[in-house]
Image (cartoon, rainbow, N blue to C red; front, side, top):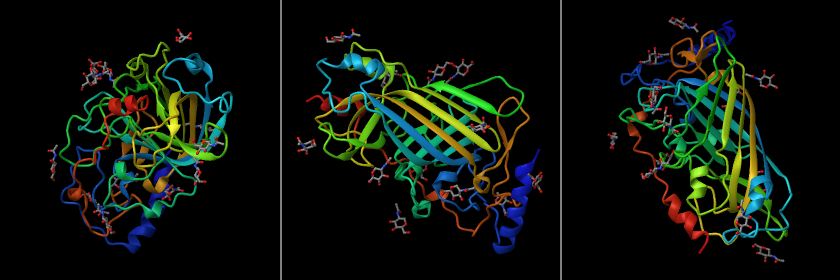
Length: 337
Ligand SMILES: *[C@@H]1O[C@H](CO)[C@@H](O)[C@H](O)[C@H]1NC(C)=O
Ligand SMILES: *[C@@H]1O[C@H](CO)[C@@H](O)[C@H](O)[C@H]1NC(C)=O
Ligand SMILES: *[C@@H]1O[C@H](CO)[C@@H](O)[C@H](O)[C@H]1NC(C)=O
Ligand SMILES: *[C@@H]1O[C@H](CO)[C@@H](O)[C@H](O)[C@H]1NC(C)=O
Ligand SMILES: *[C@@H]1O[C@H](CO)[C@@H](O)[C@H](O)[C@H]1NC(C)=O
Ligand SMILES: *[C@@H]1O[C@H](CO)[C@@H](O)[C@H](O)[C@H]1NC(C)=O
Ligand SMILES: *[C@@H]1O[C@H](CO)[C@@H](O)[C@H](O)[C@H]1NC(C)=O
Ligand SMILES: *[C@@H]1O[C@H](CO)[C@@H](O)[C@H](O)[C@H]1NC(C)=O
Ligand SMILES: *[C@@H]1O[C@H](CO)[C@@H](O)[C@H](O)[C@H]1NC(C)=O
Ligand SMILES: *[C@@H]1O[C@H](CO)[C@@H](O)[C@H](O)[C@H]1NC(C)=O
Ligand SMILES: *[C@@H]1O[C@H](CO)[C@@H](O)[C@H](O)[C@H]1NC(C)=O
Ligand SMILES: *[C@@H]1O[C@H](CO)[C@@H](O)[C@H](O)[C@H]1NC(C)=O
C-alpha cells in the first residue's frame, strides 16, 4: 500500500546522513509550497506527484476540419505539407500538484506539464529563475504556477472534472475553452515547437504551433468552428498517462522565448499529444490512493522525505512572473498583414 514511502524512507535515511537540514522559518503549511529546506530547481516547488516520461506528438497539416480553410482569404497553405503526418518526441515532466488557497477556482489538482528537447540537461536549470523562464518547448498549465507567497486569486485556465471513483487511478479531464488564452500571463499562450519541412519542402525547420479554441478562432472571422482542445490524464502513485487533442495554427518558429511573431506562412493542423510517465519518487510527495479525490501526504522536506536542505532560502527573492511581451490579438492580426 505504502510502497513509495518505504522507498522514500530508504532514500531519506541515506540523504539524511549526508546533509544537515534546518527548518524553514517562512514555511506556511496552508500553502502548497514545499519548505525552503527542499533544494531543487523551480520545477518542483509544490506539494504533489511528478512524473518523468516521454511525449509523442502527431501533427497533421490540413487534415480534418482545417481542410475547409483551404482557399479562404486568411489561409496561406502549403501543398507540400498537405496530408503529411509529422511526429516528434520530447522529454517531459508532468506535475500534478496540490490545490492551494491561492487558487481561485475549483480544480482539485493543478496540472503543470512541460515538454523539453530530448536529452535536455535539467542540471542546467537555475534555481534563481522561475518556471516561466525555463526553456521548455511547450507547457500546459491548468493555472499559472504560484511563485510567491503573496499571490492570491490565481485563476483557473481550464476546469478539470474528476471522474467519480473510490480509489486510484484518478482521472481528470477538461476542455481548454474560452478562458484558456485570457487568464494567463504566459502559460496558455506558449506555443508548441516542433520540426517540419518548409512550405516548399526544401529543409527541416522549427515551427510554432498555437492551440486553437472555439472562441479564439471565431474572433478571427473564420467560418470554420474548431472544437476546444480536450485534455485527459489518468494517474496513480506509479504512472500517469495523458492525452491532449485539438487543432493548431502553425508558422515557422520565431524562437523559444517568443510568443508570436510575424510570418508569411500560416497553416492549420490537427494535433495529438500523448504522454506516458512514471513517478519520480525523489521529487514526489506520497499520493494517497484510497480516496475519492487525489490527496498527498507531505513527505518531501519532512525528514522521511527524500530531499533536505543546505539551509539556503530562496523563495523571498522571486518577483512577479516575467511577462511575455506581445498581446495575443495584436500578434495574430499581424500574421495577416
Ligand atoms: C513521516 O514522518 C512523520 C513524522 O515522523 C510521520 O507522521 C509520517 O507518518 C511519516 N510519513 C511516512 C510516509 O512515513
Ligand atoms: C524543513 O522545514 C519544515 C518547515 O519548517 C520542517 O517542518 C521540516 O522538519 C524541515 N525538514 C528537515 C529535514 O529539517
Ligand atoms: C468557408 O469559406 C470558404 C471561402 O469562402 C468556403 O470555400 C468554404 O466552403 C467555407 N466553409 C464553411 C464550413 O462554410
Ligand atoms: C466553483 O463551484 C461552484 C459550485 O459548483 C460554482 O458555483 C462556481 O461557479 C465555481 N467557481 C469557479 C471559478 O469555477
Ligand atoms: C542567477 O544566478 C546566476 C549565477 O549562478 C547568474 O549568472 C544569473 O545572473 C542569475 N540570474 C538572475 C535572474 O538573478
Ligand atoms: C509580493 O511581494 C513582492 C516583494 O516581495 C512584491 O514585489 C510584489 O508586488 C508582491 N505582489 C503582490 C501581488 O502583492
Ligand atoms: C469553470 O466553471 C465555472 C462554472 O462552474 C465557470 O464559471 C468558469 O468560467 C469556468 N472556468 C473556465 C476556465 O472555463
Ligand atoms: C477575455 O478578457 C477580456 C478583457 O480582459 C474580456 O473582455 C473578455 O470577455 C474575456 N473573454 C473570455 C472568453 O473570458
Ligand atoms: C528539432 O531539431 C533540432 C535540431 O536538429 C533538435 O535539436 C530538436 O531536438 C528537434 N526538436 C524536436 C521536437 O524533435
Ligand atoms: C523555400 O522556402 C524557404 C523559406 O521560406 C526559402 O528560404 C527558400 O528560398 C525556398 N526555396 C525554394 C527553392 O523556393
Ligand atoms: C498508463 O499506461 C500504461 C501502459 O498502457 C499502463 O500500464 C498503466 O497502468 C497506465 N496508468 C494509469 C494510471 O492508468
Ligand atoms: C526525473 O527527471 C528529473 C529531471 O531530469 C531527474 O532529476 C530525476 O532524477 C528523474 N527521476 C527519476 C526517478 O528518474
